[in-house]
Length: 293
Image (cartoon, rainbow, N blue to C red; front, side, top):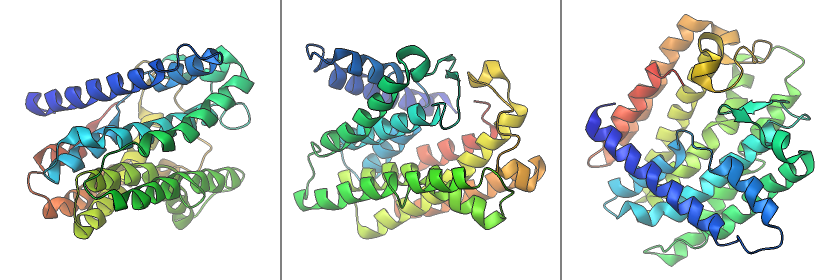
């Protein structure tokens, strides 16, 4: 990305890091402080912070101070982090490393890792409910969006489909069913909640959802490609671990996946026409085509 756009990304990332640190810091005197330590170990481990960036940028594109989306951005990131903690558990993907560090259960044990994930999921709704909306009546809609995208119709539903598909080769539709829920759903939550925080219109909410759906697929396809072409040093975790899974690379091959990433990214960008200044999200979306991490 160009320097002006990377500067905006840094500002968004720095803000959400400070926001999350401040949130966890409120509980330093609680007797269950090791729980918050385990939560912070994963929540504050860095990463691309794409979901908060989407929430902030959609809020800004609606003409509102982007910081108003902070409770929603934090809530989505907390839910995303809980899902990573649980994904890494021995009963799920059984991963030892995440972002170049031992996974949560390797540091704190399986029991506390499970509870850290549970706490992040539950506390996310308390954080989201603290958002100050121009139309307070929209809070019900916002919480409903967050719950649906995180739960049985969204991310959790996608994870279930993924587990059920482990012992067989999936069709194209089955892979799409998995990934539109497992990966795209939380991106959808971030984008739509950003519009709600910004006081956007129904048309803009629909456009944000369309953007998220297409970009979520582009992002996941690129992730599947990087498991094949990336290195452990670049990725901060093991690579080649998805070779036997129902990935887009297994379904289509690398060349077709590269084409699909470009096509889905352009489809996402076309959804942004209902917003004013969307240059930042356009460049961010296109950067997914060539990312190496």
